[in-house]
Image (cartoon, one colour):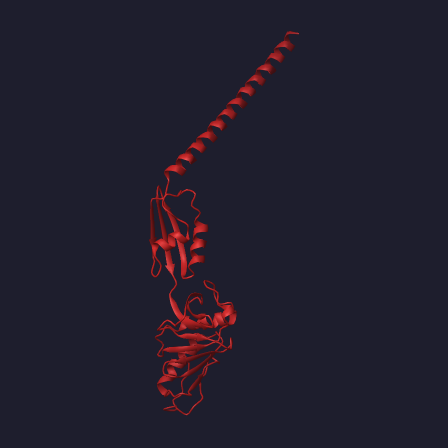
Length: 263
């Protein structure tokens, strides 16, 4: 009988100990939650944006960049959503190629941007679009920007601000051309006709017409043109055909000498 009482007492003590442990765990968790809430509240109050630094601006102002990203002084630096701000800035300003936002605790935000550098100007019914080397149109104007080749033959529906040209054949040909031609290949480009997406036609400043075909072997094609130019006199109807990438064909009788040019 005594053994049964001792056994029951032992079970009762264990239950009481377990009850205390549960109560202590619950109390600890409750205190932890309160502490976290307190820290978040104090942090949200204390970590307020006091300084906004914008780096890399050219045509855009720091105020325009911060406003587009909805980043303002006095707002919480902790609750700032970088991805949302970056997306908003790029959507508002297609001329922005890259955006990087950095928090510098306790109260400073640094926004570093990279603006697109134009290489050409697309002619559409809506006006003239500046375009960078990635074939991304980003700025429209009623008049062409001086100093850039004019690109014709591209439907305005394919031109979307901040997005590469929506035509793989034209996109590849233009990207490869501007990767190979930097304005110092012995000839200046006045106009590029992309009416036929599989045959880029370039018109030089001295009135040569160059058929480049599709976007393949663009370096070889431009090398052929550069090697051949000293032996060719430019005329209004002079055409150089380098579509094959391995040979050049001249369509008029303006060859100064008969020296053959190999790639």
